[in-house]
Amino acid sequence: MQLPSFMLEGKIALVTGATRGIVFGLATALGKAGAAVAFCGRSETSVREAEIAFKEEGIAAHGYVCDVSDPVAIRTMVDAIEKDLGTVDILVNNAGITKRIPMTELTLEEFEEVLRIDLTGPFLMSQAVIPGMIRKGGGKIINICSLMSELGRETLAAYSSAKGGLKMLTRNIASEYGQYNIQCNGIGPGYILTPMTRPLSEPSEDGRANPFDLFVRSKTPADRWGTPEDLMGPVVFLASEASRYINGQILYVDGGLLSYLGRPYGEEDT
Image (cartoon, rainbow, N blue to C red):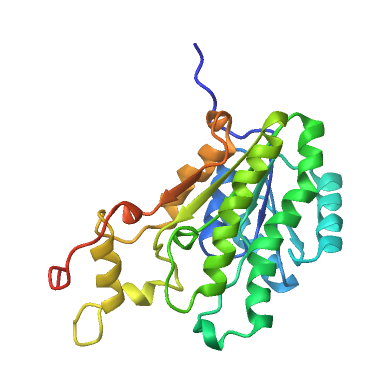
């Protein structure tokens, strides 16, 4: 019996919001596994800078400027990708924003903006690529969910609403299009160290531990933050034939956080 392949040679992967951060790493992993990588961002400058960064990683990624909340822009981009590379086999929906505002102070416009990017965007992107996947005989959709797909937290009413909805959109796509050999799953990252979050993990100038770092480690059985590398294996797995009978699932890459109540206050390392 031959094991199913984890390699992605001959596959075309489209990753939204991959110009920086965690998902730049995910797109890099897909490229190193053999996929041809297309990605999009909202500004010409960020897209061109990311193309250079991908090239430094040895990946000839194709960048496109696209607002994922604009169905016309999405259709234009998908048509361009099909012309430049071919039909999309793998879609990673990552593009998103958050607004940390107490719910009673959050305006309707701010709430709807988060939902438009974080939830409507993945809906529109998936809607655009699914017909091509059906014609091609299958495909993979990977939605970047969140711990906030399961948990609430102060000031994150809009983000949690969007990510909770994204979890259910993932399951509905799996339910509706699994018959066409399309697998739709999600990845829920825990607290991941990036240039943006690293200051939250570092001690103060007087050597005292950062309170947020203590919070993260006290809630995480692994007793550490995650790294972008921790997410690379899961995204390649969900993009590959090795996950062909996994559908509608959310894989939480969180060091065990969702399984653990956490250490009591006062027991954290100092």
